[in-house]
Image (cartoon, rainbow, N blue to C red; front, side):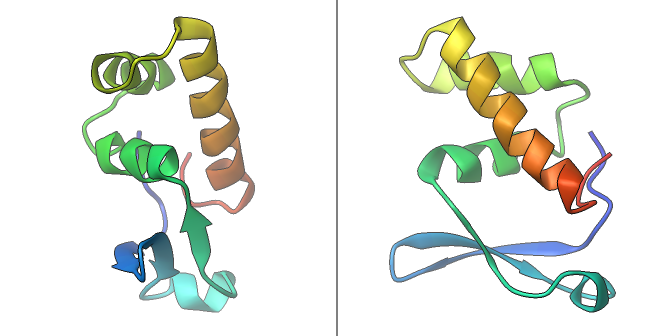
Length: 87
């Protein structure tokens, strides 16, 4: 999956934050706070070619059933798509 906008992942006071960088600052106003699961999904996106790749990584990392993993991944990626962060 291709990340279209420059986003910087930081941990601040125990929270996982995405901060727009570069030209993304002009398009996106504010910070994005992620859950631990969201931060994990974000960390595997550069290597993932498909949504299913992300789901499989979730299943390897967490004790979760496939349906829950698929829904969590879909919800997170849909939100990123809404903001034009990924294709």
